[in-house]
Image (cartoon, rainbow, N blue to C red; front, side, top):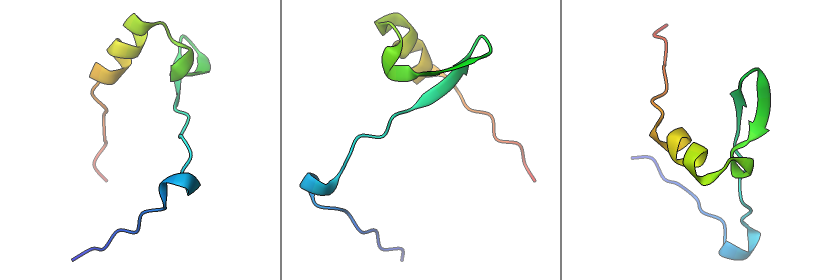
Amino acid sequence: MKQTMQLPEDQRQRCEVWTRVMGYHRPVAAFNPGKQSEHRERRHFCEPK
């Protein structure tokens, strides 16, 4: 069984997520609410080895 370690709340920091849109890399936090919602609904493609 795999054990996970968690940091205390005061040592954690928010992870900034960036994505490529129209040829530019932008932080998702800078998107308008509609585009953020669209980003959450995306399905990610994983190519088998």
